[in-house]
Image (tube, rainbow, N blue to C red):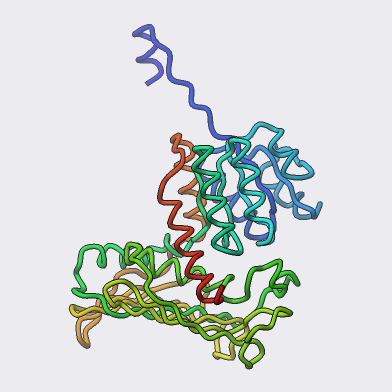
Length: 342
């Protein structure tokens, strides 16, 4: 192509890859860095982490990246985007700081500990006209993609019920997860956010009419306790039109396997469901149901974990600015607020 342009007396267009900084490079941060680097669409320009060991590990993925001390130093390096994988209490403030500096943001969930925090970030992205996305990675499984297509096509008739669960046999290994002030909540904020997002996203974000929930800590109702967070939760969400969504999530549930992750949708014309395989956190099948018959929609292997990150990198490289779809992040956060009774 370049030879043809030269013969015509023209120059090939110069493509400048976005320069991306990575703030927080624990396992998740490094995994998303690798996914973005593998696209070949971005340059890893800067890395920051309180742990020199973690920063050094990340440097192995991107040897040319500059190791910097904090977000301010990162922004001073002249970036186009920043990937935030820090503790939840920092997400909103760090995202707003980056957006106000004219830098696009890809943030780990939750975007904020409350709907007010999430709304403030989205407002900053709109004001700055910069791309904003959150790592809601389960949307990018092949199974959920197929399920959403079937729902959007009206193939299940009137969808009247959805059941979603995320039970994790383990709990987070960092103390801040268990501090309500730092985390914003327990298993609902950590795992339930994915369930709420999947339910609303798959059904094209209908209005939420009612939310009722029960939260437990150590087997007892959480009540008004502020010294700990929930480790088991159930919620019933009524959507416009009468569809009922039931959610359940937990840490350290004695369920006989590592994890139970499912998302089922049921209508007058059939059903569809995503299910993890053998307790896996990574392998999923998706099926369609007609009466007692079932049809396979998707099965492992499916390398979905980094797709949300790669999608953001692609959109940024194509010059995408603020996308109004980011408003939906606030819709999810509002449901979480109602689950927590705030």
